[in-house]
Image 1 (cartoon, helix red, strand yellow):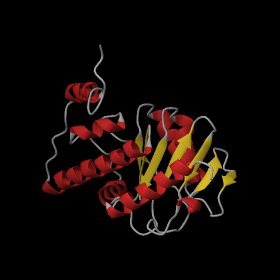
Image 2 (cartoon, one colour):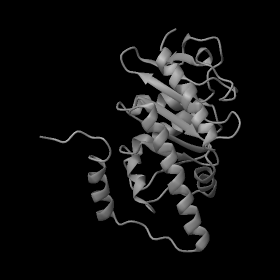
Image 3 (cartoon, one colour):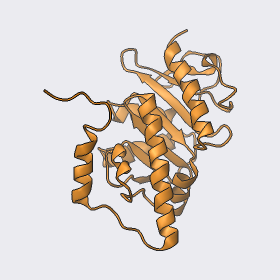
Length: 221
């Protein structure tokens, strides 16, 4: 089976995404990109994550052609390919309808630096892409414009829809989606309380620098 390991990972993280409450029912989607072959493995359309098997995951190229798989791919496959075309460092994309990110997107808000973990997005403020019908080439084009206008961002909120993030691999992309939801919850709670204290640009710059050595990063000699 082509891209077997990637397909197995997508099944695994689809279950994690559902269990974490980042997406309800069959909403949201996950992909993995193999730079060597130019192939993308993506979750199928309309299947529950706990019902999905590796064989259900679809392999496509970035032009939308199905390479392997009998299922219909996620309707948002164009949303994923636009990230891979605009972010050469991306190896995985996660799109969720997580409650707080979606709430802010429905309010017309951007995701702001209320907490330093926003540093994982690469920016101090995650942009908002205007509403466009889901699963359409027009939505992918709108996200492409957002990515071009914000060359450092690894994420964008989708107005009245959800959030989409990218990272070097699937574990990191999933972790970023989780962190964005945490920041969104904190921001929403601050808005409800009527007071929001954002981290300054200078302090966020320090956070970005610290992020380079965060986690199990080998020491430079």
